[in-house]
Image (tube, rainbow over all chains, first blue to last red; front, side, top):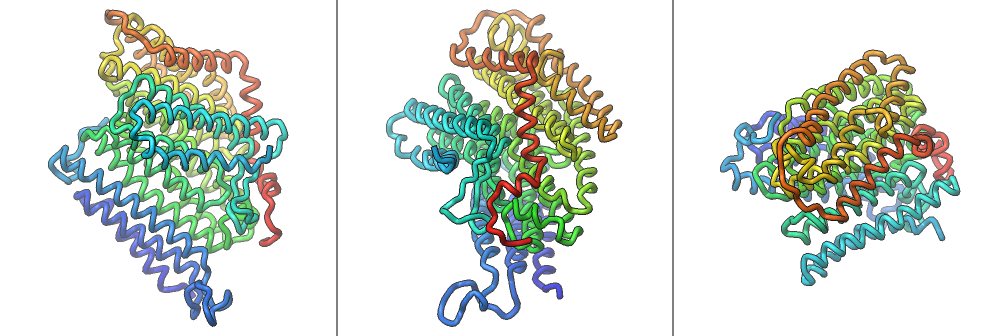
Length: 114
Length: 495
């Protein structure tokens, strides 16, 4: 059976992609990018999910056979950190853009071309 | 010496980047010398690794933390990685000299940090043996590259950085989806084990996963529909950074693409992906050459030329034959040399004469003869004039393309070379036969670097055999996946 999480995560990726491709405002594009990253993270987690098992933290009553796959969770932790770094970087560039161009509309930010 | 010391290649730039704030108080000169010293040490270690790998013929497998692969993450430094880590280190060192002598970038401390991290990211991408680790290093490279692109803080720089960031963000998300699919199908992230299991998984899943990964890496590797950021970023970035982008950041992306591509070569539907790549690569060459023709800014023109040559390398890798991969690696080496030469020359002219527009190059032969000589050699080589290094690699790529039967691709690439000749000879003409000018002082170390690179270009052009034999070994390292699997000591789990 295909998990419902797969549909949810792909939907999030597509919503994010729509935001990046269609919106004109830089901030909205960056929000789209973040939504996309969230979708990818959800996909990773759901690939490691096994129905009825708990979080992969060794504690009383939870051994390797009662936990879900821990590797995707480690991956997602890394991917979240990377996503935060990218977003912070992008927002600081957006600040410079607003200072230099006085707008955040990508159609007006077009000095480099050709 | 133990091969495990090769892990210093990752550790030294990473640690030293975080020590930069500590020496900030000692002044700008101290920071510049520090970067120079670290890159020199890195070059030394890379040279040792290169010697070790090429003399013993065995790859160095660095096992992190004593955990054997596939449980632990390993570094795989084979023929290819040894060669390119050396190139990354040497180019970084040369650019550190350029920083030291000519470029003033403020604030220098953060720039030095990002500079070292960019070197680290590319080294890691080339050396790693784990596909998620590849993603992490790719993001380190990409985020430092975004920051360095925007470093001049002008509107143009921020605009270029934003374009790069949007495309890079989409690319890395797609890459991660591909990794998720492949992990879901194989249950491993180790590249050798993925190669081992690739033939056993559902071919549709493998094809989609591979296509998504290639799509993600194509942003870094500047292939046609995804390379709109590249000319902007090259133009807006500080001059040493542009040379580093062209010499090794894009190469790291290309290598990662070729490596993942050939790892999955036992998948039944593999040839569909190859065909897609051939089309993308050919379009990259053609579109970039025609865009270069229209440029007034020399830095942007050479950026387009760099993209077109990268397309040529991608074409060679997409052929799926041993001859193609060897030729691609050879072109990568040659391209790294000439693009460092060209961007160093152009950047130095832009620093000294206040801009990289074609007007600044009129009469350069009288103003800065040594630099003009370097740029001319680089331009002649880029066009593919015989007795210069690119001639041999272009020839081999075209022969390999014809062998596989892509006559149309070979024809388009040759036609694009004619276009390339037009704009490069226009530049050379402007340098030597137009305009007047007074002599401008040239920095001796930079002149020595340019002359040395020019001599290297001509030396490889006249005696291509040595460089070709190294490239063949490096190409076999990518192409021969069975050997790659055998070299990594998997713990006997899996298939």
